[in-house]
Image 1 (spheres, rainbow, N blue to C red):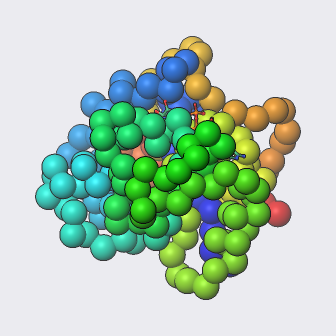
Image 2 (spheres, rainbow, N blue to C red; image 1 turned 90 degrees about the vertical axis):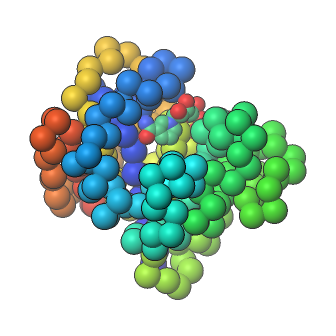
Length: 194
Ligand SMILES: NC(=O)c1ccc[n+]([C@@H]2O[C@H](COP(=O)([O-])OP(=O)(O)OC[C@H]3O[C@@H](n4cnc5c(N)ncnc54)[C@H](OP(=O)(O)O)[C@@H]3O)[C@@H](O)[C@H]2O)c1
């Protein structure tokens, strides 16, 4: 069974961006030390344009071979004319409004999102599935998430876009590792307690 991992950047108070979802205030914390960690352990979570800009486009994937994004998150790249923002991964975008995929390499999931994710998880393979966000798709897939990798930046937003756009329900996770960086960023990994 392949894991579905929600790998996400958050404020201390659990927001993935400002009320509109903008997380650009977190970018300055991607300093030399933190970028070295991302390059070494999670290079596939850096989008293709970013990988090219820092000269790591040829790095092999370490943990994931597939990405799932919500349409609003995918729109950010699409607005800049980028139809395949994670070209090093198999890309899926959940959407009921994008009637046709803007790219032959990007598959749209319009119906039965949970069923499709279960199908992907049941595939054979050593690599997992990267749930990129945003909030609404993470809420829709909360019960399917096997692992959380939360990059917490030392910022308090007060309000903003929550990690999960879902109703109240308690799910328990087990802390598996914590890594602290010199600039105050924490990366915590949790496994799902089933
Ligand atoms: N901090 C981080 O690491 C991080 C990571 C990713 C994204 N973000 C931020 O998150 C924001 C976007 O989050 P969001 O919550 O507004 O949107 P989102 O989750 O990215 O996308 C929501 C859209 O996904 C589709 N969708 C959701 N559930 C579905 C289902 N069950 N079946 C089919 N389609 C489904 C719908 O598209 P249709 O409307 O087309 O039907 C829905 O409008 C962005 O601003 C981005 O910057 C932050």
